[in-house]
Length: 211
Image 1: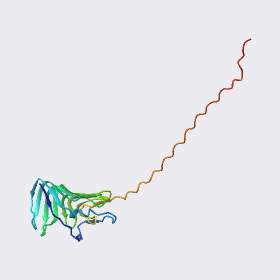
Image 2: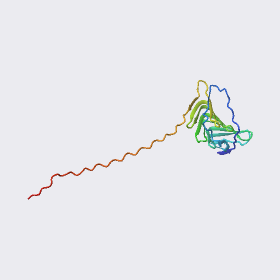
Image 3: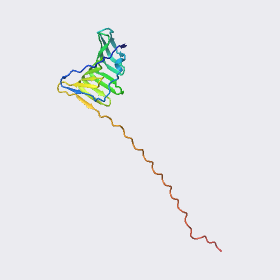
């Protein structure tokens, strides 16, 4: 089944809560670009094996089996999804579970961000994805992050992570690739000199005739 729902973009970004248990804040470098700004202005489409859909204020649409949700370059996939509509019948957030639940999106330079976890909660108004349970977020050419819970802000590229118990949040920042240096043009090989032609032998004796 295929359907299209409305969405909107809020003017302000939600601030993250402080004081996470065993938390580690991983802020991306300021030079990193953000997700496609036009994505949340696009219609949200979905397909699934089964659907229990509502298009009314404060309702929840449930999608089951091979769930695929798209909005511009944003893609959400999983086994089960719940799309929450607010009092204005706008999409407030989407909760996806799976093995794993998956999110991906392009940034303004067409670099890919991907995230996988047992569950993800995508705030469609503020562009914030919360990944819980074996969470992994990767940014093409920039780095990757692992934790029990990762919160990714698509507007700022900020990642906040936490792990319970003795677990640790793990992050890797990749160095910026150096520009390729020009390879000097190879010098042409010197032309081979022509082989010397031997001079004809000088015959000192003349042929004698018989008398």
